[in-house]
Length: 386
Image (cartoon, rainbow, N blue to C red):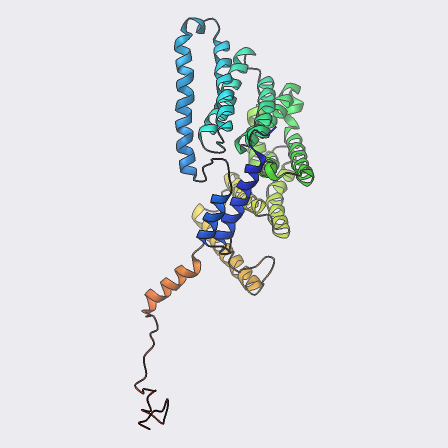
């Protein structure tokens, strides 16, 4: 199913591991270059700016090909516009296949054709079905999954998750008022299913090529689960979807549940991520907790934003100080010791700052005025002069 040579993909993983070892200081730059030269890998762009530049270039190339075909088939556009758009989709898939066989993997050019083919396919299906959302989302879900299984692009995983979520949402809309009312709980259950399905698949896969995609899907499910029960999201969507106005002295149904959910879930993410040492979940928990604070402040602005920021800064300082005191002497597990695999110059910057502030100078060794050798002192190295 994968279009790339699996041996070269394994070599790419080895090169990435070697880079991590170089960052951690376990191997030097020369050893890393030697490893990179010995292993044959697909052509990819690790620099995001370079990849973005190639993506823009690929988008121009894709649109130029489509525009040229449009000029050739100008007479057919007025009557068979949907056929032309399907032709654009075919060009996108064909271009992605050709570039992938040229060993371009995450290069930027291939990204443009893969993403462009999905976009034009959605437009073509929308024209053909008069904008049927469920049909569009269903087809994009299938094609995005197939594209990821073949090309291993993480953007297709994100598109797959969004399209699959859209299917569930529009299906609940078809039920009517009842479906819109229970939508938050359905989305919570849907997010839980995605998360545990990803965990199950990770434990059973034998190749590492799909690990990043499954990890991205799990992160998406964590965010979706939180947003499904966030008070701000639920309340505002209730007004939009159900068309009801909430009086000043009233609230949405199960308001206390959503209040608790808004704060309990971020705290659970933080605690669980620390215990299981999952960095991505930790950052998600931190961001969701920040959004929870914003949610309460949005409806109950008891304090000004300046006071809230000040209190938050004090709390962060206290928590950081206590964490440092607790973890500074630990050598394993959760510790305050610097991570060798992170790009940091903390110690070097501190040394430069201290030296510049205190006026310290490098220590120099001074030679002794007492000379030894040749019998000049107490017969040390005595010769005929002793």
